[in-house]
Image 1 (tube, helix red, strand yellow):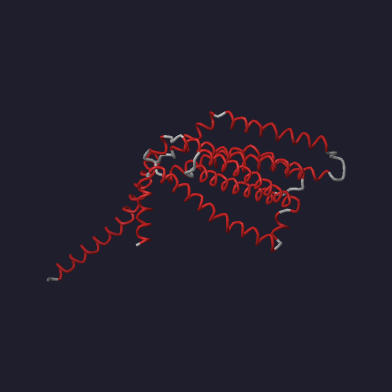
Image 2: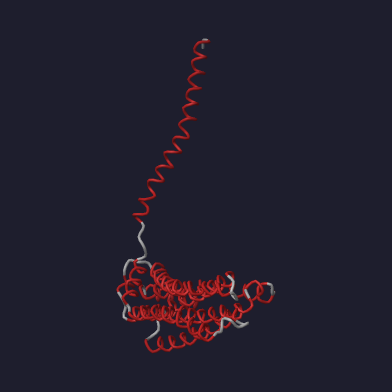
Length: 300
């Protein structure tokens, strides 16, 4: 190889390396631009849960739920007016007005979100389960059915929260209640509503005859009322002392984390029970064939 050929080969290598280095970033930019352009396409392909849309449409047409929302809109201002009328703002104990108002709003919100919304979701699903609604035999998966029922119940609970939250936040202006305590109370109430809705779905999807389901539903309603009373009393005690003072206690922190430790597995268990019950309803022969095979292998 001559010196001239050696120089030309080196020049070709450098130009090719420069082209690779220049083309590399442009290729990355083009790929990122393609990803950005594909994002609207992914949004167009995404579809909301059909069970969620169906439940919301029926809930908005239901007079019972509309009546509950109107009851909230009427009960909250009337309770505030009644407390203001019974309290002398010029007296030395006027700073307790904020706590009294918040406790009244807390009791109303807890009774609606912990008792009414789970019962409403569970009763509707139990009726559909009893009459074998076509929804249970479509191509929609069991998990999507449970998630749609759960999302609709949580949406109704959030609607009740959106009605009560402005009134509960307004009590901070009268002192006696701080914002961390308000946030803690709302978080506990929403977690209790979430667990109650999951338990109602699991109970409604259970393969039990009509009489047994009515008995279980009545017992579940009593349990929800008891849980609502216990949570309301607990949160009123937190409001009286403040969440910062309560969290300084080691017993309170221990009990709080123990409650979380038991609530998370309970929610997972309710979800698994709901999905399994719907699967048994859709494929009863497959379930009983597997159970028969397990019993035969166990006796062998």
